[in-house]
Length: 332
Image (tube, rainbow, N blue to C red):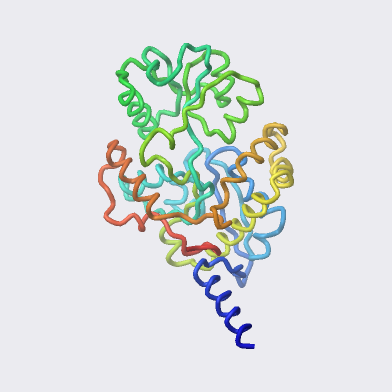
């Protein structure tokens, strides 16, 4: 009997320490909320659609309306109250909060590691960033993006002014690369990289997290306003628990999850979606099998990089004001 009690105590201690006991928050009334995606549906969003399809939101008494950005971006929509939740990126949220004083906070990571980098075709004459001079880079034109490209050029002895920078003229970045519209572009490997593989292109991928100190960060992330986080905790907790269920299921069942995504976004290429889901699902959970958990050290290191590159005007004295694990069912 004593042995059983000891084992029970140890089990409870493990649950308390790692916070991975399942949560059962259920709102008293059906509560409508709006979630704004960062872009068109893709495998970064699979867990959301799994949560819809499997009834995880419904079980929490949440009626989630999913919208895509049009006139405003998620950070602006959430800040102004036009959306309750949004999908953003660590760099974007930090810029909005630090430079503009936006009342935003990250409540969950989607991927545990950044998967982005530069891509170029090997017949472009580029063997490494040392060959970027007089080449054309296509991107979205953000200050963060430009700062990283300039940093890489400088670190490789290239005058950044010799790199021609243009705005992306096509949504399909790999097609633009194929058609020689530009030589280099910034991609997220889980989608565009897999696309390049499926097209059997001979390309090089320059992984940022392996080449830029302090670069690895949480992107994308779920965000809400500080007002909602402070005053509507039950709603945020119910939302966080449902998405955690959705992404955990997607991580463990990538093929089925991809089919669910295709059900809600039939315009997506089926083969690309299946391959992308297989590749990206391993990034949803951390080593302990937890979804969404964010580390202060990652926020600290990346914020330092943003400040060093002059992307943000000042460095927050406490990065914990930018994110919280409070609402996640699995937290450490």
